[in-house]
Image 1 (spheres, rainbow, N blue to C red):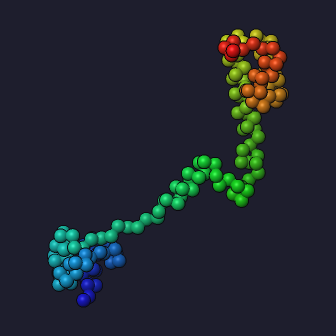
Image 2 (cartoon, helix red, strand yellow; image 1 turned 180 degrees about the horizontal axis):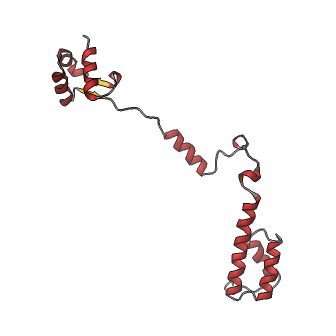
Image 3 (tube, rainbow, N blue to C red; image 1 turned 120 degrees about the vertical axis):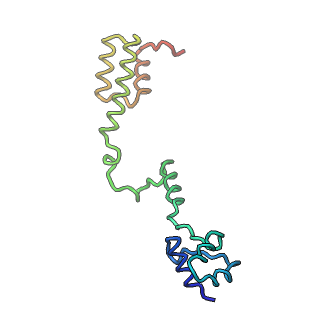
Length: 152
């Protein structure tokens, strides 16, 4: 039994392609006997004929890849195209370190852990790149005899 014309009519009514038309195999005989568009409309209303959903591109693999990247994976040698400095500039690293150190020094000056001359001394040492981090700076201060109030 040929249902090519019925599929064409259903495609026109449902405004989709012929290949997206699905006909319920249980009602194939009734659909084959439908000759007019009115009959096809009735079949669509009763659920014998439907338009299949448009198949999209699956995002599963892309999302898995994104999760891996968020965890820090997929950054090996083969994925790198710029120099280390292009990917994470030394200047940006320096700015992050020095800003945090200066912020800490200001807080210490304001809560009077450091007096003005000590502040200036450590500020200039930080500017000269003596400290790797805030922890390193505080360790050096402790060795040089600076007393931190709340640490016991």
